[in-house]
Amino acid sequence: MTTFASIEPLLAQQAIELPSWAFGNSGTRFKVFETPGTPRTIEEKICDAATVNQYTGLAPKIALHIPWDKVDDYGALRAFAADQGLALGTVNSNTFQDDAYKFGSLTHTNAATRQKAIDHHFECIDIMHQTGSTDLKIWLADGTNYPGQGDIRGRQDRLAESLAAIYARLGDDHRLVLEYKFFEPAFYHTDVPDWGTSYAQVVALGEKASVCLDTGHHAPGTNIEFIVAQLLRLGKLGSFDFNSRFYADDDLIVGAADPFQLFRILYEVIRGGGYGPESTVAFMLDQCHNVEDKIPGQIRSVLNVQEMTARALLVDQDALTLAQNAGDVLGANGILMDAFYTDVRPSLAAWRESRGLPADPMTAYAASGYQAKISAERVGGSQAGWGA
Ligand code: AOS
Ligand code: ZN
Ligand code: ZN
Image 1 (cartoon, rainbow, N blue to C red):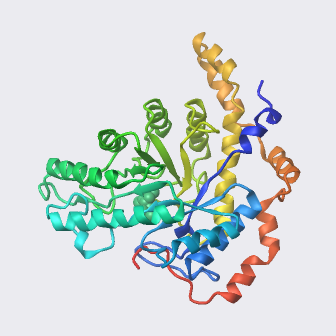
Image 2: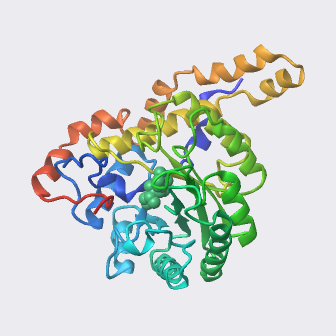
């Protein structure tokens, strides 16, 4: 029997990195809606992320996106974030907005275009030295729309070469995480479509490279927790981009579409040693809040991750192993489901209060007046960067 009291020390170690772009306006190809109070600068995004952390105690880092969060002085930005109680986290590169990359970036047939994309990653690494960030996250829009349009094999070889050049530039304490996505914006083939391709590429690079798993980047029906288990087993699960999806890469609030899937993923994370002081797996959100307010959207997200983490920690592992080894199919399934169906919300509320946090962060934030204050103060907030 695993009790809530027994999992409290582990819960205290939870840290979820917030994406700077979650605080900017975003939308679909049809419309970007303006949200009052949207940050105009990266400093304002940091203040909003710090607010999420203040109400939840769960979000001590903010991930940056280059060039969307470009500034002149990253040392000053780091100090500014520290003053707000935050560290600067993962640096996300961007090779999907320039005309030069219409037919690819790190995979492009033209050496000069590939070098332009490699140089952008060198710039990101320089920034990491100044921000104190350890992770460089690469997601590529590279791919083709029509069979025959590109040489799939040649693109894979060029990708390997480009990644090797970037990898060689990493600092001693830096890591490279390579994200996969099965489609979009390319619709026929994508150059890093699945965990196997990402794995093959990062294994060739070396120890400092691993896979980033974005939960929204799989075909419907994919058993994501199996991928989690396998990557942890292989020592190559570097980070998560958490979000949820109903159809494609929806970037909705994590745990909103399928809380049971989130529970199953987190169970395998814990089972595989991906959670806790010894783990190097980074928990990040990759979300956009198109129609809801962004700060409560992020508060709800980190609370969802915390809630499912608590439930996954509550799985009675010893009893489960016994049932599995005894071939007790329904008994084993019942043990897992017991933990999933445990309502941890009252325990988490009490636990929060005992740590000086609001029992209900959503209500506390709504009552704080922060949203009205930023709506009045900030005029002309910016788009997250998509389509900008
Ligand atoms: C794109 O679909 C990916 O999920 C990226 O991780 C991310 O949303 C983008 O690179 C913003 O940094
Ligand atoms: Zn992502
Ligand atoms: Zn995505």
